[in-house]
Amino acid sequence: MEENKPIELRSEKVRNIIGRMPPVLVRYGTVMIVAALLVLAGIAAFVPYQPKISIEITAMQDEGGKVHYIAWIPQRAMLQRGKIAFIAGHPPVEGPMPVRFVFHDVPDTLHVSRSGGWYEVEVYPVDHDGQAIKIPAPFTFPAKIELRYTTFWKWVARN
Image (tube, rainbow, N blue to C red; front, side, top):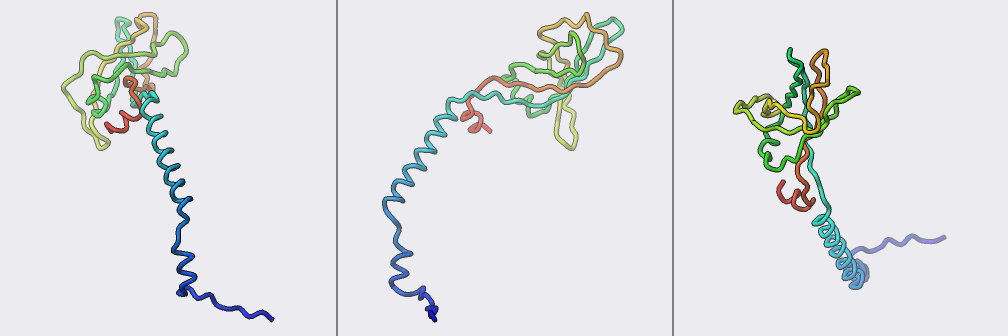
């Protein structure tokens, strides 16, 4: 029969083994971790990134046949108004609907709700005049405000 001898955790041999760190592993492990972090930071400094903000646009037609597009733009997006490249819409209807929009005037009225502030802004199609469209009833569709390209590093540093 074998006797199970208890290991003495407080003995000098055990403390010596546990307390000693392998210097080669620590040295090269640290160098590899720092090198990996530097490579990731270098990639983040050059990878292009285009932030997008989700919104909704409502399309409606007046008696004269002109189509108007109204967007509800969050206040946080309006703070970055100078960086807006365009608004990309995704209308749910087939046919000649515009998909790129811009806005010119921003109203002074800020609407406030529990989820935050937003502006009601008329947006204008970039690639379509809107005259050949017939809209039987107003409808709302999703869109995204696409800000100008930046690098991922700059975007993280500003936010």
